[in-house]
Image (cartoon, rainbow, N blue to C red; front, side):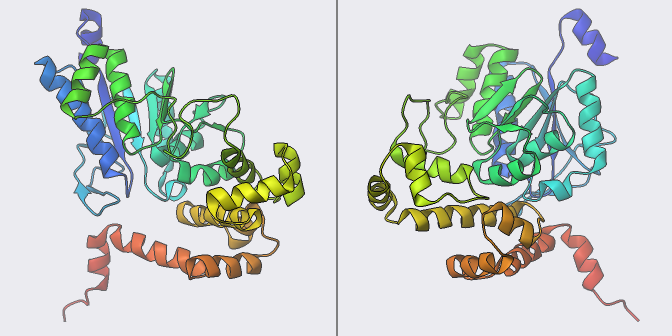
Length: 345
């Protein structure tokens, strides 16, 4: 009722529900909320409102170990104009049906639904990204493509597409928030916020990584084309001659470029790219080792295990087990502590 009255009187204050998932990136949350706070401060009045939301209203642990208090639970959060999901390292395991249903409901009522970092998994699971480009952190892209092959992943910093917003996380969160502030208020205010944070805003289409071209070019560097072609063909690795033919160069030129830029042979470079993709899948998902081996172009799980161990010093199973132990120990430690304390007699 209050929000409707504000809208009818022309005094509506845009509201944000910042949804925190376990192991959410604290740096992104700080940048998002600080941008809104500074906008209010510089305006001398409340022009934005925001609330921190968790699944059950309890504090949530960030990826760096700090705990963040929540204002609301998914059940009690008030209707907002923007819902931004700050996701952690196990998105498919931590995105509950309640969260997905709340996002769908908010979208039906016309709210803007956004994702920070791996929050894109929640939007995709909720069926809210059909026919749209998706932006998420570059490390999670292979896993996302494996889960949602029908969706197109965009490698830029962030994307505002109507009522859908997604960004790569990290400092790109600030770029996205400055854009939203400019759209909701003025570009002048967005510039004031950027100046207060001693930051030079980047274009939405800028590349996520400094080693990638920030703008499309007619003919990318040969090294970029080599890596791009290899990353696009993980499951069925191309032969050296096929790579050279697709790139329109000789096999000798391909070998020379790989040695010059990466100090590796094309075969060894290709193997490292596939192993890194396998590592990211182990990090973000619970795919079976056989499935990961197939997705990354290894003929058998045993081949993946041997090469993975040679590269990272442990087998894929050991890597994931070690990672999950660390994550589980950090998740709701008060419950773990109570379960390990022997009862008094």
